[in-house]
Image (tube, rainbow, N blue to C red; front, side, top):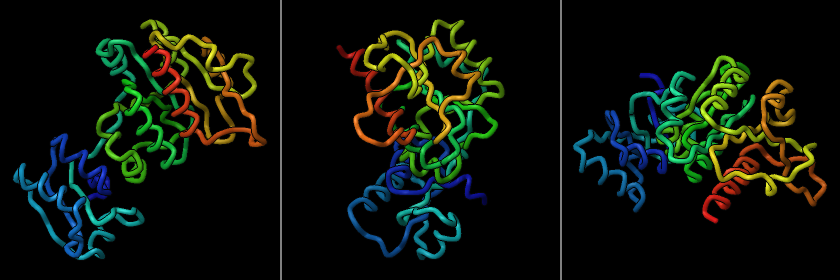
Length: 245
């Protein structure tokens, strides 16, 4: 068995069980009997999914290095989509909102971005295949179920994928600290993709050149930039705020 096939953590396990897609079994810490674990067990029992009570050290072996919180759900591996899926994802969205991650390499940041994208109702998160983190077990765990709900699209050529989005009527807004415009002054009510750069280096030059707008967040303190997952959440929910208004 590959750890790639395990969903770890209480929130992620609950989301996988509620979704019900290809869940093969649940491995739980036999010594844990609290309310949250009971909910996991009840969800599994209701779907007649096999439950395997084991010692915690067995869970540690199945998902090494991951804070599994005493539960692992064996599922079909969560996989990334190709750029060929973009037209259908855009067409299926009433008013497309996408998050683009240009070179994010920390799985914790990817997981947090997926979680924010899910909360904001984004139809996809897109990233290049090269020099970017994929759907690792850590990213999936941090996403707390969002990796199973939000399509994650990995593209070979990000610039070409951005052009494809434009052809489908999606405007690209890049987050850049040196931009003249504030994010709050940009119209985010229509089909929009928000592009965030890598930790520390920001958007690559070619990505910037393919953006329709560059925008910044107002920074009142002394720090030069925000963590990419924090900035992504702010940008996504500014789009949500404008669309609700």
